[in-house]
Length: 159
Figure 1 (cartoon, rainbow, N blue to C red):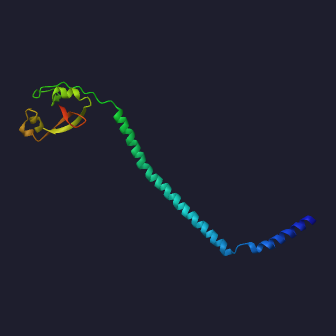
Figure 2 (figure 1 turned 120 degrees about the vertical axis):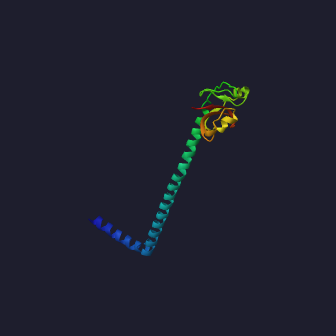
Figure 3 (figure 1 turned 135 degrees about the vertical axis):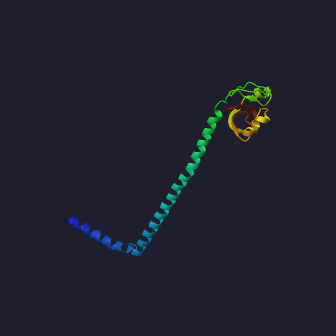
């Protein structure tokens, strides 16, 4: 027990020597306040960066999906539409195109597309077809053979 009492005396002497070295309670309070303020600011910054990252993610995902879809659509082969030229004033069946340009232009248009459209019946008169004046204001369903530049090559009436 002699060693134990000797250790207690040494610890008491050390405690007495260190009492003056401890900071006053006001310093402890200031340090605790500064730590709490830094933690709040850090939490605000991390919340702002998380919400900012989510906001930016949606437009980027949308742009990426549009880019992928456009690449897929552009890689598809164009539809090969073969149309037999018809005389401009001849009556055609519903499944035949009526050429609006010379045959050479139709043959050279390899990237043509078929586009559905509703045209006024007066367009029939411009093509040389008979039109009932009582129904001239009505529209008719058609399919147009169109080049990529927008010029119409042929027309087909859908009944």
